[in-house]
Structure formats: C-alpha cells, structure tokens
Image (tube, rainbow, N blue to C red; front, side, top):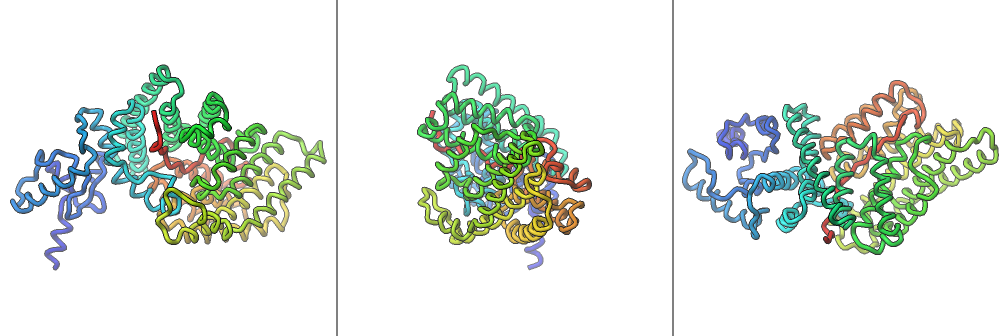
Length: 513
C-alpha cells in the first residue's frame, strides 16, 4: 500500500508528461506549469479530456510500457470524438491555437467554478464551451473570438496576481494585446454593420471584461452612457424589449451595473436621474419573474435599492436645511422604504420564485431553501445599506434606535454569510452583501466587533477574488482598507464612484447575426 501511495505522489502532472519535463510534484498544481502561465491539469491516473485536443499519436511519452501506451492512445481516439476540434475540422493556425487554449482554460478552470452557482441561478453563467459553440466562435469576426481569449487571460492574470506568480507580466502583455485586437475588430465591424446584435454583444463584452480587470473603475460611467445611447438608437427600451436577446442583455447590464454602482458611489456623484427611473422600473416589471438577476438580488429589494439611490441623490442635490418641507418629505420616504424592507418575507419570495416556470429549471432540490437564504441575506444587507447611506445625507438621524438596529443586523448578516460563503454556489451571488458588512466594520463603530468583522471580510474577499478570477474583490478590499482606520459614514467610505460588481460574463448563446 505504501509503495502504491508513493508512486501516486511521484506521478508527473499531465502537462509535464506531455512536454517531457521533470515535474516538481507540487499539489494541487505543479509550480512549473504555474511559472509558465499554464493551467496545470493535475495528476489523475486518467488523461484529462483537455489534452485530447492534440492529434492522437502526435506526441507520446518515452519509456512507457506498450500496454499503457495502447490504452492511452485508445482514450485519445475516443476523446477526439468529443473534442473542440471535432468535425468540421478547424485549421490550426496561431489565431485558432489562442482561441483553443482559451476555450480549454475556460472549460477546465472557469466553467467548474460557475457550475455550483447554476444550482441557484442557471441563467447567470455558461458551464462549458461545447464543440458547436467553439466552431461558431471560429466562424465569427475576430472580436467574438477575442472575447473568449480576453476572458481566459483576464482570469489567469487575476489569479497569478493573487499568487504573486512570475507569469503575471507575460499574461498582462497577452491580455492587453488581445483587448487591443478586440477593439480594432469591433471598430471595423461597426463601420461595416453599424449596430447589429453581434456588434452590441461585442461592446457589452468589452465592458464586462474591463469591469472584471478594474480597467473601467475610473471611467465606467462612460460605458453606461454608451449603453444608454445604444438603447436610444435601437428605439428606446419599449421597442428594444420586443427585439430579442440583445436588448434584454442591454437592459440587464444597464440596470444591474447602474443600480449597484450607485450604491458604492458618494451621494453627490451618482448616475441615477429622474428619467432613468422609467427604465429601471421597466426592467424590474419585465424581468422580475424570469431573469436570474432577480434570484441573485430579489426584485422587491432591488426596487427599494433604486428608491434609496434616488433618495440619496435628491438629498445631496437639494438643500433640506433651507427647505424644512423637503427634509420632512425625504424622511417620510425613507421611513416608508424601511417599513417595506422590514416587511419583506424571504419565505414568500422563495415560494414565488420556485413557482415560476423556467426553460432551464435548477437541478438543486434545495432551490427554495437556497432562495430563502438569499432573500434573508439581501434583506439584511439592503437595510444596512439604507440606514447609513441615508444618514450620510441627513435624511435619517443618528439615533440610538437606529444604532441598535444596525448592531443587530450586522450580527445577523455576519451569521448568514458565515453559513453561506463556505459554499461555492453562493460565493458569486453574495459579493455585494459582503461589501456592506465591510462598511460597518469600521473601527469608529463602537457597536460592532470591528477586528473580527474586518478579518472575516478580508478573508472572504480574497477567496472570492481567487475563486472568480476578477479584480473587483481586491478593489473592494483596497477601498475598505483605506476606510477602516479613519471610519465615518457611508459617503466617507466611497469617496468617488466605484463599480464593485461580481460580473458573470456575457451569454450570447441566443445571438443571431
């Protein structure tokens, strides 16, 4: 038994075996692969399918017994039938190789992390790039292919930063080169086709890629304005709603990015305006029953978040000190919002979600229980956002009653997150509530165990960043690290607009040319 275990621990990883290199046997991923910027396939006894993309028999290991070699060649022949290079054949040039490598990385390193989340929200991700999807990528314009390449490189780049890998500089160079090719190809297709659906998906994908890598943290409002102009050019939201997949994607991104972005912006510099309320309300009314955004963030709570944002903006741009009537009006609205938030029932909401017909029903038998948990987390988080953010603009008072409520809610949110963030299916869905808890972990807040909360938030932001391969978790931690020592109100934490968004990607499976 000991001999068998020793052989298993000294087995070379599959990449080192394929490249005929000496592996260092580090688990779960060897350092040689990490240093070269490769995704280590591990040490399993059976060759991973990802290695079947090579032509069977092209490369073989030396010194292997003939019987084992025949078995592996048979596995290669079987795996080739389901590989991404199945018929129709795609010529292997350098561009194809880059897309193939990216698809390989997605299927082995990104898709498996998305799959648990889809037990709760099946429409917020794509688990695998199938052969048919891969061939559609290869037949599409270059910017469509670069979406795959940029997404994979961005994920690898973020993880390499967390690991302080020497491959970071190389990955940065490759990422920005691919992003440049994507922009150039988009420019050419815009000139040729103006705003066809395919071009719009490319523009949206560029936004999501930039958000993931933190490129747009200083300019994300320009992206949102661009999306609004696209909607206007397509006839406005009412007309867009009847045109298919892309308009719904536009409105989903505009609504989710704008609303969540405003929560982490100072009241004096928010994106929301009176004319935006029509679009936001239309978004909720149309998609509350069938878009998985509203599994991640319950629609009734999302609506109240929009109202809180609008109330903050009005208070910041008005002058309640000079207009007592305005002060009373805003406070009455704030108290009404809090009343509806406290009255929200996660149990009833979860029952309503489970009763909606879905084209891709969640595989989890605990779907209703999962929805109840999400409802409790977001109910607590939205109240904890409402109170300090409205206190920062003098809409709500700094009273002992509200302070006591915040203390109890912080404890409740911490307990709920403790029990949920350990599960991979919730990590992507509870990013914003974790930020809310982080704001309440300031050392100036005497009612909360700040060091304990800070340690909890820091640890889980690191885990989410590594797990999702996005920059936003580190960006959120940078903001909180600057805020915690000095403390203050909500607007003291978010001194400028931040887009701290746990983006999932762009699903263009329903796209038509």
